[in-house]
Length: 545
Image (cartoon, rainbow, N blue to C red; front, side, top):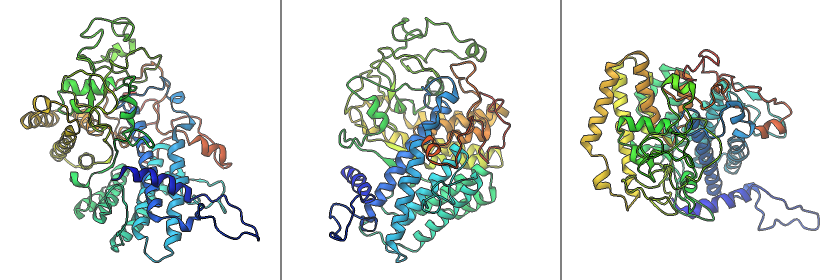
């Protein structure tokens, strides 16, 4: 992937969509600096669509991860105030202002010739997936009246079922275009390098996501039987970041915030780090980089200037559930779910993002500081749909504990192998002495699978969900969906605030759309359930909240 091309794609593709020149009878010429939509380079339009989609996936991954404790929810302890109307502004805008209009321009340029079939098929695939995720996050979305401002200047929302159905139709259309062997010569594809077979697998895998979410076993099994879906690492769907720091910054967004001259800017989730530390998970050193070897108030002297643990008393509702406000020991220094408040001078003390997926440092007990260019320089990835995720979906749809255990094993194996492959990004890391060895990885997987098979009820479900969460680290858009579907794991750390309000079942509509659409009224709560969420209403569900 050419990093400079991303920047050129954004600027030129965006510029191609806007023509501010006016013409008169005295000057009917078109300015060479103002391209009409039908004159825009199709590849630049495609790249713009792909970049906007990747930006949306980054935002949705982060939102979902924060809600389920994979990452830290830092905006406060009241869910409603923490997730205001602007939360989905970026994703909504990218879907309907960036992706859809560019898809329409590509279709107009093609004019039925089939010359741009590949670009159109990719854009339809990404638009369809964006629509599905908008429903997952907001319960409803625009579809039938979207992209037609002349006839529908204030488009009505369609139900979640209707949007899902429309997205599936778009996926079918995209699959047909790919199946017709479209022209790929000269195409610049930022995801699969114009590999038609991989795009077809992605389409079927998105359909698998729809099938498992809606409980459509017949569709799910039919796709699995066909064999054309993401099942190995070579087909994993992710966005590759670069190492450029300025104009534009192509590094992984978390790296850009954490690896700075002033230290780390992000707090990690105490719950996630403790889960992996207690289990001696082989991925721990790849996910997190420790800047210190001990945690104040835990296994180091209390320091109230940087850490409340050991000074402030434990919260009563934490005490009742067996939780603590303290971070884990050994320098795994983060914050508890929903913990806001001021920031002490801890930027060179807290745990930073690691080599996977952010392209940071591998934790080899060096306990150095973070900084620009260290580790992998930010050349990480934005995981979107990985083969390990699909195995966990297959386990969810399995009909026996033995079958689920097999997919648990397979999903863990693929996840760990992928994560370990990124260790080489940090060329200065002491991998020889600190990278988990094959026998250690095998023993860990065997132990988890054995524990799963000997467990029952909530214990069994918690083991499965916790491993799914761990595999989803960095690309967790599906985690919130799974949590609402199943209510597992029940081991999640509570919000810092004892009474944070009902757990969100969907988010508010994008405030930008509410302000500009006379037919849309904002929700009054976060308790509206997505159509596939047929569990009891809030606040009693999910039970851990």
